[in-house]
Amino acid sequence: MTKSWTVPALSRHKVASGASPLVMVTAYDAPGARMVDAAGADLILVGDTLAMVVLGYEDTLQVTIDDIAYHVAAVRRARPTPFVVGDMPWMTYHVSAKESVENAAKLIRAGAQAVKLEGGRKRIPMIEAIVSAEIPVMGHIGLTPQSTHAMGGFKVQAKEVEAAATLIEEAKALVEAGVFSIVLEGIPDVVAELITREVPVSTIGIGAGRGCDGQVLVFHDLLGFEERMRPKFVRRYATLGAEGAAAISRFAEDVRSGVFPADEETYHASSGGRRLAGPLQLSPGRRAAPRPVRPTGSSDQSTSSGARRRRSATAALVSPRPVLRLHLLRPRPAPAALARHPCGPAALARHPCLLPLARHPRPAAWPAAAPTTTPARLPRPPLPYAAPPKTYRARFDLDSEMVVRHSFR
Image 1 (tube, rainbow, N blue to C red):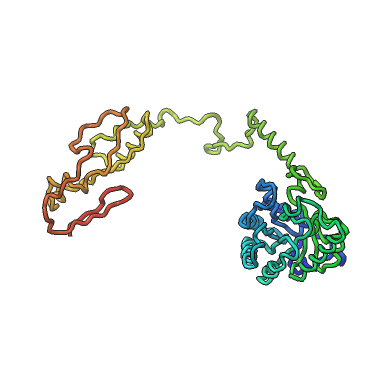
Image 2 (tube, rainbow, N blue to C red):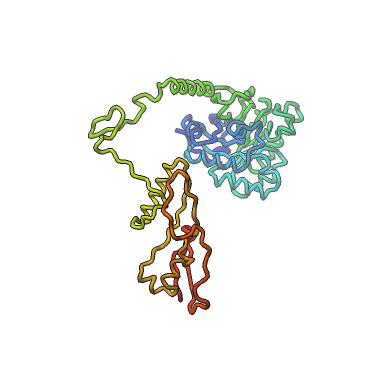
Protein backbone atom coordinates (compact mmCIF):
# COMPACT_ATOMS: atom_id res chain seq x y z
CA MET A 1 0.00 0.00 0.00
CA THR A 2 1.24 3.52 -0.82
CA LYS A 3 2.54 5.55 2.11
CA SER A 4 0.59 8.63 3.08
CA TRP A 5 3.06 11.51 2.84
CA THR A 6 3.32 14.79 4.74
CA VAL A 7 5.27 17.93 3.90
CA PRO A 8 7.93 17.41 6.62
CA ALA A 9 8.43 13.78 5.56
CA LEU A 10 8.86 14.76 1.91
CA SER A 11 11.21 17.60 2.80
CA ARG A 12 13.70 15.43 4.70
CA HIS A 13 13.47 12.48 2.29
CA LYS A 14 17.03 12.09 0.96
CA VAL A 15 18.44 9.16 -0.99
CA ALA A 16 21.82 9.87 0.57
CA SER A 17 20.30 8.92 3.93
CA GLY A 18 19.29 5.51 2.65
CA ALA A 19 15.75 6.32 1.49
CA SER A 20 14.35 4.98 -1.77
CA PRO A 21 13.80 7.53 -4.57
CA LEU A 22 10.46 9.31 -4.68
CA VAL A 23 8.07 8.60 -7.56
CA MET A 24 5.94 11.44 -8.90
CA VAL A 25 3.57 11.14 -11.87
CA THR A 26 1.21 13.74 -13.33
CA ALA A 27 -2.54 13.15 -13.37
CA TYR A 28 -5.39 15.37 -14.51
CA ASP A 29 -8.62 13.49 -13.72
CA ALA A 30 -10.07 10.84 -11.43
CA PRO A 31 -9.30 7.78 -13.63
CA GLY A 32 -5.68 8.88 -14.01
CA ALA A 33 -5.38 9.50 -10.27
CA ARG A 34 -6.71 6.01 -9.53
CA MET A 35 -4.15 4.48 -11.90
CA VAL A 36 -1.28 6.42 -10.33
CA ASP A 37 -2.51 5.49 -6.85
CA ALA A 38 -2.84 1.81 -7.75
CA ALA A 39 0.68 1.84 -9.20
CA GLY A 40 2.10 2.95 -5.84
CA ALA A 41 3.40 6.42 -6.71
CA ASP A 42 4.33 8.79 -3.89
CA LEU A 43 3.19 12.10 -5.38
CA ILE A 44 0.67 13.27 -8.00
CA LEU A 45 1.42 16.50 -9.86
CA VAL A 46 -1.51 18.25 -11.52
CA GLY A 47 0.86 20.08 -13.84
CA ASP A 48 0.50 22.87 -16.34
CA THR A 49 1.40 20.23 -18.95
CA LEU A 50 -2.37 19.83 -18.87
CA ALA A 51 -2.38 22.53 -21.56
CA MET A 52 -0.43 20.35 -24.02
CA VAL A 53 -1.45 16.75 -23.29
CA VAL A 54 -5.13 17.31 -22.43
CA LEU A 55 -6.30 20.68 -23.77
CA GLY A 56 -4.38 20.52 -27.05
CA TYR A 57 -2.27 23.69 -26.82
CA GLU A 58 1.24 23.94 -28.22
CA ASP A 59 2.80 25.12 -24.95
CA THR A 60 1.92 25.49 -21.27
CA LEU A 61 1.29 29.25 -21.39
CA GLN A 62 -2.41 29.02 -22.28
CA VAL A 63 -3.65 27.22 -19.18
CA THR A 64 -5.28 29.28 -16.40
CA ILE A 65 -5.51 28.93 -12.64
CA ASP A 66 -9.17 27.94 -13.01
CA ASP A 67 -8.17 25.12 -15.40
CA ILE A 68 -5.67 23.75 -12.89
CA ALA A 69 -8.12 24.09 -9.99
CA TYR A 70 -10.79 22.23 -11.98
CA HIS A 71 -8.48 19.29 -12.63
CA VAL A 72 -7.08 19.32 -9.09
CA ALA A 73 -10.64 18.87 -7.85
CA ALA A 74 -11.18 15.98 -10.29
CA VAL A 75 -8.02 14.27 -9.01
CA ARG A 76 -8.97 14.74 -5.36
CA ARG A 77 -12.43 13.26 -5.92
CA ALA A 78 -10.67 9.94 -6.58
CA ARG A 79 -9.34 10.12 -2.97
CA PRO A 80 -5.79 9.11 -3.93
CA THR A 81 -3.21 8.23 -1.28
CA PRO A 82 -0.29 10.03 -3.04
CA PHE A 83 0.51 13.60 -2.05
CA VAL A 84 -1.22 15.99 -4.51
CA VAL A 85 0.68 19.04 -5.79
CA GLY A 86 -1.02 21.71 -7.92
CA ASP A 87 1.03 23.57 -10.52
CA MET A 88 0.69 27.35 -10.65
CA PRO A 89 0.36 28.49 -14.29
CA TRP A 90 2.12 31.33 -16.01
CA MET A 91 1.19 34.84 -14.78
CA THR A 92 -0.48 33.58 -11.61
CA TYR A 93 2.52 34.37 -9.37
CA HIS A 94 4.41 37.01 -11.37
CA VAL A 95 2.57 40.27 -10.63
CA SER A 96 2.43 40.63 -6.85
CA ALA A 97 2.76 38.65 -3.66
CA LYS A 98 -0.91 39.26 -2.80
CA GLU A 99 -2.12 37.89 -6.13
CA SER A 100 0.24 34.92 -5.78
CA VAL A 101 -1.24 34.01 -2.39
CA GLU A 102 -4.79 34.31 -3.72
CA ASN A 103 -4.07 32.03 -6.68
CA ALA A 104 -2.26 29.50 -4.50
CA ALA A 105 -5.27 29.47 -2.16
CA LYS A 106 -7.53 28.56 -5.11
CA LEU A 107 -5.55 25.37 -5.69
CA ILE A 108 -5.55 24.50 -1.99
CA ARG A 109 -9.33 24.99 -1.82
CA ALA A 110 -9.69 22.76 -4.88
CA GLY A 111 -7.89 19.96 -3.03
CA ALA A 112 -4.14 20.39 -3.57
CA GLN A 113 -1.89 19.78 -0.59
CA ALA A 114 0.90 21.99 -1.94
CA VAL A 115 1.65 24.22 -4.94
CA LYS A 116 4.57 24.25 -7.36
CA LEU A 117 5.96 27.29 -9.13
CA GLU A 118 8.86 27.92 -11.48
CA GLY A 119 11.78 30.31 -11.12
CA GLY A 120 14.72 31.24 -8.95
CA ARG A 121 15.59 34.44 -7.12
CA LYS A 122 12.96 36.50 -8.94
CA ARG A 123 10.21 34.48 -7.26
CA ILE A 124 11.57 34.69 -3.71
CA PRO A 125 9.07 37.39 -2.53
CA MET A 126 6.13 35.37 -3.92
CA ILE A 127 7.38 32.13 -2.34
CA GLU A 128 7.86 33.78 1.05
CA ALA A 129 4.35 35.27 0.92
CA ILE A 130 2.75 31.94 0.00
CA VAL A 131 4.70 30.07 2.69
CA SER A 132 3.68 32.77 5.20
CA ALA A 133 0.06 31.94 4.32
CA GLU A 134 0.73 28.35 5.51
CA ILE A 135 0.73 26.96 1.96
CA PRO A 136 3.55 24.48 1.20
CA VAL A 137 5.57 25.36 -1.91
CA MET A 138 7.61 23.13 -4.22
CA GLY A 139 10.23 24.93 -6.30
CA HIS A 140 11.18 24.31 -9.94
CA ILE A 141 14.45 25.45 -11.55
CA GLY A 142 16.55 24.59 -14.58
CA LEU A 143 14.51 24.28 -17.75
CA THR A 144 11.29 26.09 -16.84
CA PRO A 145 8.69 25.59 -19.61
CA GLN A 146 6.84 28.80 -18.72
CA SER A 147 10.02 30.71 -19.72
CA THR A 148 10.33 28.92 -23.09
CA HIS A 149 10.29 32.17 -25.10
CA ALA A 150 12.96 33.80 -22.93
CA MET A 151 15.13 30.67 -23.09
CA GLY A 152 14.73 30.27 -26.83
CA GLY A 153 12.82 26.99 -26.62
CA PHE A 154 13.05 23.75 -24.64
CA LYS A 155 16.83 23.67 -24.23
CA VAL A 156 19.08 22.10 -21.60
CA GLN A 157 20.17 24.68 -19.00
CA ALA A 158 23.28 25.15 -16.82
CA LYS A 159 25.70 23.46 -19.23
CA GLU A 160 28.38 26.07 -18.50
CA VAL A 161 30.26 26.36 -15.21
CA GLU A 162 28.99 29.87 -14.45
CA ALA A 163 25.39 28.91 -15.20
CA ALA A 164 25.71 25.79 -13.05
CA ALA A 165 27.07 27.83 -10.12
CA THR A 166 24.21 30.33 -10.49
CA LEU A 167 21.65 27.50 -10.49
CA ILE A 168 23.12 26.03 -7.29
CA GLU A 169 22.87 29.40 -5.57
CA GLU A 170 19.27 29.78 -6.72
CA ALA A 171 18.42 26.36 -5.26
CA LYS A 172 19.85 27.45 -1.91
CA ALA A 173 17.86 30.70 -2.09
CA LEU A 174 14.64 28.74 -2.66
CA VAL A 175 15.35 26.62 0.40
CA GLU A 176 15.89 29.76 2.48
CA ALA A 177 12.56 31.11 1.19
CA GLY A 178 10.80 28.01 2.54
CA VAL A 179 10.29 25.45 -0.26
CA PHE A 180 10.01 21.84 0.94
CA SER A 181 11.21 20.26 -2.33
CA ILE A 182 12.68 21.31 -5.67
CA VAL A 183 12.07 19.98 -9.19
CA LEU A 184 15.21 19.97 -11.34
CA GLU A 185 14.41 19.86 -15.06
CA GLY A 186 16.60 19.73 -18.14
CA ILE A 187 20.03 20.12 -16.56
CA PRO A 188 23.21 18.00 -16.73
CA ASP A 189 23.29 15.09 -14.28
CA VAL A 190 26.44 16.35 -12.55
CA VAL A 191 24.76 19.68 -11.79
CA ALA A 192 21.70 17.90 -10.42
CA GLU A 193 23.91 15.78 -8.17
CA LEU A 194 25.66 18.88 -6.83
CA ILE A 195 22.34 20.60 -6.06
CA THR A 196 20.98 17.46 -4.39
CA ARG A 197 24.04 17.30 -2.13
CA GLU A 198 24.02 21.01 -1.32
CA VAL A 199 20.34 21.45 -0.34
CA PRO A 200 18.71 19.82 2.71
CA VAL A 201 15.34 19.28 0.99
CA SER A 202 14.42 16.55 -1.48
CA THR A 203 14.99 17.04 -5.21
CA ILE A 204 12.88 15.49 -7.97
CA GLY A 205 14.41 15.24 -11.41
CA ILE A 206 12.97 15.24 -14.91
CA GLY A 207 15.72 15.07 -17.48
CA ALA A 208 18.29 15.60 -14.71
CA GLY A 209 19.89 12.17 -14.35
CA ARG A 210 19.81 9.56 -11.59
CA GLY A 211 21.39 11.68 -8.85
CA CYS A 212 18.14 13.26 -7.60
CA ASP A 213 16.01 12.13 -4.65
CA GLY A 214 13.12 11.24 -6.98
CA GLN A 215 11.88 11.23 -10.56
CA VAL A 216 8.77 12.58 -12.30
CA LEU A 217 7.26 11.88 -15.72
CA VAL A 218 4.14 13.10 -17.49
CA PHE A 219 1.32 10.55 -17.45
CA HIS A 220 0.73 10.70 -21.21
CA ASP A 221 4.43 10.41 -22.05
CA LEU A 222 4.96 7.47 -19.73
CA LEU A 223 1.99 5.50 -21.14
CA GLY A 224 2.54 6.39 -24.79
CA PHE A 225 -0.51 8.61 -25.34
CA GLU A 226 1.42 11.61 -26.63
CA GLU A 227 3.34 11.27 -29.90
CA ARG A 228 3.79 14.92 -30.90
CA MET A 229 6.82 15.38 -28.64
CA ARG A 230 9.25 12.84 -27.24
CA PRO A 231 12.07 14.40 -25.22
CA LYS A 232 15.25 12.45 -24.66
CA PHE A 233 14.48 11.84 -20.98
CA VAL A 234 11.09 10.16 -21.67
CA ARG A 235 10.83 6.39 -21.53
CA ARG A 236 7.69 4.75 -22.92
CA TYR A 237 6.37 2.01 -20.61
CA ALA A 238 3.32 1.38 -22.81
CA THR A 239 1.81 2.39 -26.15
CA LEU A 240 -1.74 3.02 -25.03
CA GLY A 241 -2.32 5.58 -27.77
CA ALA A 242 -1.82 3.04 -30.55
CA GLU A 243 -3.55 0.27 -28.58
CA GLY A 244 -6.55 2.52 -27.92
CA ALA A 245 -6.86 3.47 -31.59
CA ALA A 246 -6.75 -0.23 -32.58
CA ALA A 247 -9.44 -1.07 -30.02
CA ILE A 248 -11.74 1.71 -31.27
CA SER A 249 -11.16 0.52 -34.85
CA ARG A 250 -12.29 -3.00 -33.89
CA PHE A 251 -15.39 -1.56 -32.23
CA ALA A 252 -16.25 0.40 -35.39
CA GLU A 253 -15.89 -2.75 -37.52
CA ASP A 254 -18.18 -4.73 -35.21
CA VAL A 255 -20.84 -2.01 -35.29
CA ARG A 256 -20.79 -1.69 -39.08
CA SER A 257 -20.89 -5.45 -39.60
CA GLY A 258 -23.75 -5.96 -37.14
CA VAL A 259 -21.71 -8.09 -34.73
CA PHE A 260 -22.13 -5.58 -31.89
CA PRO A 261 -24.19 -5.67 -29.78
CA ALA A 262 -24.46 -9.44 -29.42
CA ASP A 263 -27.28 -11.31 -27.68
CA GLU A 264 -25.43 -11.38 -24.35
CA GLU A 265 -24.93 -7.60 -24.56
CA THR A 266 -28.64 -6.87 -25.07
CA TYR A 267 -31.44 -6.45 -22.53
CA HIS A 268 -34.49 -8.71 -23.09
CA ALA A 269 -38.09 -8.39 -21.97
CA SER A 270 -39.74 -11.22 -19.98
CA SER A 271 -43.32 -12.21 -19.10
CA GLY A 272 -44.11 -14.45 -16.14
CA GLY A 273 -40.53 -15.64 -15.93
CA ARG A 274 -40.47 -16.48 -19.64
CA ARG A 275 -38.38 -14.57 -22.11
CA LEU A 276 -40.31 -12.89 -24.91
CA ALA A 277 -38.96 -13.70 -28.37
CA GLY A 278 -39.76 -11.92 -31.59
CA PRO A 279 -41.49 -8.58 -32.08
CA LEU A 280 -43.90 -7.51 -29.35
CA GLN A 281 -47.45 -6.94 -30.70
CA LEU A 282 -50.81 -6.13 -29.15
CA SER A 283 -53.66 -8.59 -29.60
CA PRO A 284 -56.54 -7.35 -31.84
CA GLY A 285 -58.93 -7.29 -28.90
CA ARG A 286 -56.71 -4.98 -26.87
CA ARG A 287 -55.60 -2.65 -29.65
CA ALA A 288 -56.45 0.92 -28.80
CA ALA A 289 -58.84 2.55 -31.26
CA PRO A 290 -57.71 5.91 -32.68
CA ARG A 291 -59.42 8.90 -31.15
CA PRO A 292 -61.34 11.18 -33.49
CA VAL A 293 -59.75 14.58 -33.89
CA ARG A 294 -62.18 17.44 -33.77
CA PRO A 295 -61.41 20.98 -34.93
CA THR A 296 -60.24 23.33 -32.25
CA GLY A 297 -62.94 25.82 -33.08
CA SER A 298 -65.82 23.45 -32.36
CA SER A 299 -68.55 25.07 -30.28
CA ASP A 300 -69.19 22.07 -28.05
CA GLN A 301 -69.73 23.80 -24.70
CA SER A 302 -70.40 20.59 -22.79
CA THR A 303 -66.76 19.51 -23.03
CA SER A 304 -64.45 20.50 -20.19
CA SER A 305 -61.64 22.97 -20.78
CA GLY A 306 -59.05 20.23 -20.08
CA ALA A 307 -60.54 18.02 -22.79
CA ARG A 308 -60.56 20.91 -25.24
CA ARG A 309 -56.88 21.57 -24.57
CA ARG A 310 -55.98 17.91 -25.03
CA ARG A 311 -57.99 17.75 -28.27
CA SER A 312 -56.25 20.87 -29.56
CA ALA A 313 -52.82 19.41 -28.81
CA THR A 314 -53.76 16.16 -30.60
CA ALA A 315 -55.03 18.07 -33.62
CA ALA A 316 -51.81 20.03 -33.82
CA LEU A 317 -49.81 16.80 -33.83
CA VAL A 318 -51.77 15.10 -36.63
CA SER A 319 -52.18 18.21 -38.74
CA PRO A 320 -50.30 18.25 -42.07
CA ARG A 321 -49.00 21.64 -41.03
CA PRO A 322 -48.37 21.55 -37.27
CA VAL A 323 -49.06 24.96 -35.76
CA LEU A 324 -48.45 25.99 -32.17
CA ARG A 325 -51.88 27.02 -30.94
CA LEU A 326 -52.41 28.88 -27.70
CA HIS A 327 -55.99 28.85 -26.46
CA LEU A 328 -57.26 31.38 -23.95
CA LEU A 329 -60.63 30.17 -22.73
CA ARG A 330 -63.26 32.58 -21.53
CA PRO A 331 -64.57 32.06 -18.02
CA ARG A 332 -68.27 31.17 -18.01
CA PRO A 333 -69.96 32.81 -14.98
CA ALA A 334 -73.13 31.32 -13.62
CA PRO A 335 -76.43 33.07 -14.59
CA ALA A 336 -76.93 34.25 -11.01
CA ALA A 337 -73.52 35.90 -11.01
CA LEU A 338 -74.36 37.65 -14.29
CA ALA A 339 -77.54 39.03 -12.84
CA ARG A 340 -75.73 40.45 -9.79
CA HIS A 341 -72.87 42.03 -11.74
CA PRO A 342 -73.02 45.87 -11.76
CA CYS A 343 -72.60 45.95 -15.53
CA GLY A 344 -75.66 43.84 -16.11
CA PRO A 345 -76.00 40.56 -18.04
CA ALA A 346 -76.10 42.14 -21.49
CA ALA A 347 -73.08 44.38 -20.98
CA LEU A 348 -71.10 41.66 -19.24
CA ALA A 349 -71.23 39.50 -22.39
CA ARG A 350 -68.99 42.13 -23.98
CA HIS A 351 -66.99 42.95 -20.84
CA PRO A 352 -63.28 43.46 -21.66
CA CYS A 353 -62.10 41.18 -18.86
CA LEU A 354 -63.92 38.23 -20.48
CA LEU A 355 -62.61 38.73 -24.01
CA PRO A 356 -59.73 36.49 -25.19
CA LEU A 357 -56.43 38.37 -25.44
CA ALA A 358 -55.26 36.66 -28.64
CA ARG A 359 -56.55 34.57 -31.47
CA HIS A 360 -54.42 32.42 -33.72
CA PRO A 361 -54.89 31.42 -37.39
CA ARG A 362 -56.46 28.10 -38.14
CA PRO A 363 -54.58 25.68 -40.51
CA ALA A 364 -56.13 25.54 -43.95
CA ALA A 365 -56.41 21.74 -43.77
CA TRP A 366 -58.92 21.85 -40.92
CA PRO A 367 -62.63 22.27 -41.56
CA ALA A 368 -64.05 25.66 -40.82
CA ALA A 369 -65.58 26.06 -37.40
CA ALA A 370 -69.11 27.14 -36.76
CA PRO A 371 -69.48 30.93 -36.82
CA THR A 372 -69.35 32.56 -33.45
CA THR A 373 -71.05 35.70 -32.29
CA THR A 374 -67.82 37.18 -30.92
CA PRO A 375 -65.67 38.98 -33.52
CA ALA A 376 -62.08 37.86 -33.95
CA ARG A 377 -60.72 41.16 -32.71
CA LEU A 378 -63.27 43.20 -30.82
CA PRO A 379 -62.18 46.65 -29.72
CA ARG A 380 -62.39 47.20 -26.02
CA PRO A 381 -65.73 48.93 -25.36
CA PRO A 382 -66.09 51.71 -22.82
CA LEU A 383 -67.69 50.85 -19.54
CA PRO A 384 -71.48 51.23 -19.67
CA TYR A 385 -71.51 53.83 -16.89
CA ALA A 386 -69.84 57.20 -16.76
CA ALA A 387 -68.73 57.38 -13.13
CA PRO A 388 -68.49 54.05 -11.32
CA PRO A 389 -69.56 54.34 -7.73
CA LYS A 390 -66.96 51.75 -6.68
CA THR A 391 -63.34 50.92 -7.58
CA TYR A 392 -62.82 48.11 -10.06
CA ARG A 393 -59.87 45.84 -9.17
CA ALA A 394 -58.56 42.98 -11.29
CA ARG A 395 -55.65 40.55 -11.03
CA PHE A 396 -53.94 39.64 -14.32
CA ASP A 397 -52.27 36.23 -14.67
CA LEU A 398 -49.06 36.59 -16.75
CA ASP A 399 -48.89 32.86 -17.50
CA SER A 400 -52.41 32.54 -18.94
CA GLU A 401 -52.61 36.21 -20.05
CA MET A 402 -56.11 36.53 -18.62
CA VAL A 403 -57.83 38.37 -15.84
CA VAL A 404 -58.35 35.64 -13.31
CA ARG A 405 -60.02 37.65 -10.59
CA HIS A 406 -61.95 40.90 -10.57
CA SER A 407 -64.15 42.68 -8.09
CA PHE A 408 -65.79 46.01 -7.30
CA ARG A 409 -64.99 47.52 -3.94
